[in-house]
Image 1 (cartoon, rainbow, N blue to C red):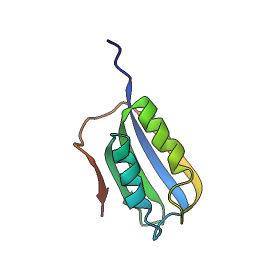
Image 2 (cartoon, helix red, strand yellow; image 1 turned 90 degrees about the vertical axis):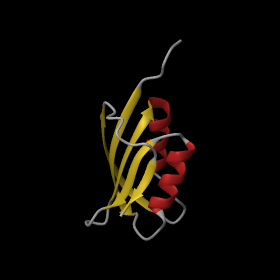
Image 3 (cartoon, helix red, strand yellow; image 1 turned 60 degrees about the vertical axis):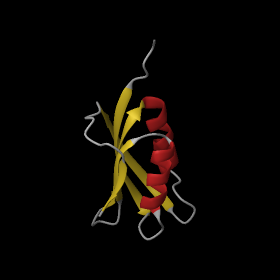
Image 4 (cartoon, rainbow, N blue to C red; image 1 turned 60 degrees about the horizontal axis):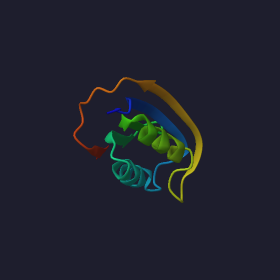
Length: 95
């Protein structure tokens, strides 16, 4: 049995990404993909996303982050990739 590689994405999304339900839609998309981690607003107006799971699913979320929900205007997605920590039991919105 082949097990798909698991990865961790750390992303900072910049643009008009606060006040447009970005966190809600990111959580919905991440849960649809079976990912674990969190999304939160940052004080500089950007949104931070940390997601872990199978590489294919995490890459799908990464692609989605470049457009985001309907009202968002994503200007940039800064990303780094790491080995997963396994510390989250679900995907949550942090405040």
